[in-house]
View (cartoon, rainbow, N blue to C red):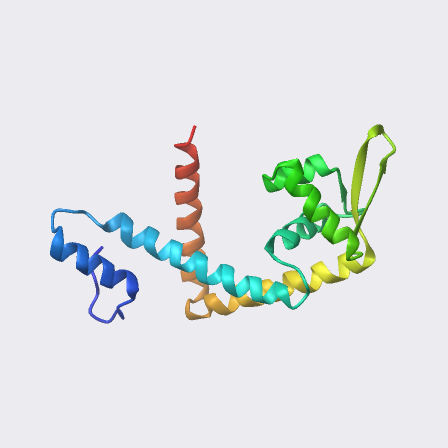
Length: 172
């Protein structure tokens, strides 16, 4: 990945330069990409957490509420469906559900089709909160992309989609 003269150096460039000095035999192209992805993910995770904190929730709680919201009315899933979607253990899910239920953002009720099962449903308060929180999170993300034009943002999304797909395909 060759540097163009007009590009500003970032911390990843400094790391790449150090490796070039001590190990000029290394091909650091992958490090240039993944070093930036890692740093970007960490920075955006912190910014997004701050946006959600204004609503009294963290990323984990946001994920539960957003998953319920995305299902559409009546905004209901079983704890097992939520666990599978969010790749959480049932124990981890129970803790999140307990906290969100205590806050009045969702409620659990018996599943009318399964005597042993439960259904988790967003409350009106939870629906209002998640709609505001998702807007706040998207505002943070949109601001981060403001240095790119629409074409660049679209191209970046396509490149990352392809990288993610090929990476996940190789896990099998």
